[in-house]
Structures are given as C-alpha cells and as structure tokens.
Length: 291
Image (cartoon, rainbow, N blue to C red; front, side, top):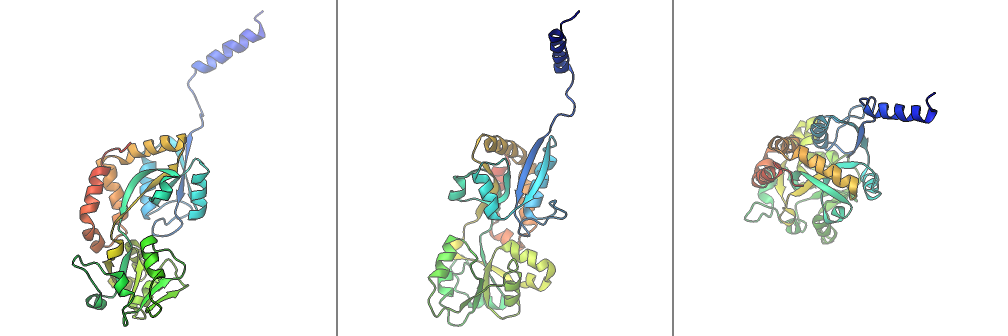
C-alpha cells in the first residue's frame, strides 16, 4: 500500500507540471485627476480627456494586467503615493517636491499658465520683445481690470506676483470658479479685461460656450517655461518596476506621438504653434525609453 505522504508528494509534483489555469492577474491601479479636461470619466471609465487618452493607450498595450481607475483629489492621490501604495498617478505635473515622493515617466510638455483676454485688449498689454506680457506691470495698470479665483494657486511665480500687487491694483478676486469657466465668461462679456488660466481650460470651456473660444491667450514673461507632466509611481521597488514597464510602452515613436496627440487635442492652435519647438524636441526624446 502506498504511503499517504508519497501520494501527496506525487500529486504536488503532478500539479506543478500541469499548465496553470485561473492564475490571478496583475492589477494596475491608475490614480486619475478629478478635473476636466485632464480626465472626463463616463461610468467610472476614461474617455477623451488628456489623462484618459494616455492611460487608454498604455492599458491597450499592457493586456496581461487588470486595469482599474481611481478618481481622486490631489490630497488623496499624493497621500497614497507617499504611503507607497501600488498605484500610479496619470498626468501629474512634475516638480522637485514630487520627485522626492515618486518615480516619473515623462509623458507631456504642458504649456504654462497664460494671460486670457479679448482680442481688442491685445494692443493695450505691456508686451516685451518676445510678445510676452509683463504681469508685474499689468497688475499696476490703472485702467485694465483683471479677475482671478480666490485661493486658487496659479503656480509659485505667479502667486508671488499676485500677493505683492499694489493696493490700488485693479485685479479682483472671485470665489466662483467652476473650473475657470465662469471667470472666462466674465472676460468674454467685458466685465473684466483679463484673467489667468491654462490653455486647455480655455479649450474645454469653449466646447460648451463657443464664444469663449474667441478669447486670446498671451504668454506671461515671468512664467514662460513649459512644464513637464507625467506618470508618477511610488518611490519603492514596485514603483521602479512599474515605471520601467510604462516607459517601455510609451518610449517609441508611436508612443511619443500618442502622448503629444493627447495633449494637443485640448490645446489651442496658438499655444501649439507658440511652443512647437519645445514640444517637437520633447517628442523626439520621448520616442525612446528613458529607463
């Protein structure tokens, strides 16, 4: 009679030789921004936003994982990254502080914050030789009226200029933002001469308010450098391995073109032309793996 232990050993050996069935698949969790047009979910799934297009491109070329999408505000998102949870942020702006928390795969070169005005206001702006407006001078203009959203951050350089504006500045603040759409409408209707916003916000707002699309964007001299955007994964072994996998997917000519298409679908023609040289150079470098 065969000893039970020997039977168990034979069964274990047989199981190890049989093809694996029903194995658990890897799960990839994507932390998505909760602001359009960066992300525009339908039934909890990505669609046509900037981050949406990026993550759909990657997921289609990563079939051996189950992809899930978590829509979260920045506070929750970066807390998860800081804790080292197995999730990556899509379309995150890159800066020195975030580089300490995460490994990045660069996917986009984002045009910086712009001045937004009616076309008739353009000749009245203080411009330098490069066609950039001097925001510091503009904030002291006794005639031109500006409007910005209260407590919204416009980036360190611009926030500092706004905080130091003179007491008699004609810049006003409003608490009604609605992703910038309401403020843009105030400029469109002539209730303010200018505001500050990103190019893609103008494009998004113009989808529902076509007249907003007639507004013009002007670069700001004190804030004229495009920003790197990318996918951020926690700074641990899992994060490094995941970044390398993502980098291999997007680090091709096809991948680089797809990343640029994602952002250009929500940027104005003027902005695309203004930063064409930088964007083209970014695409050239993105066409091969960085890791």
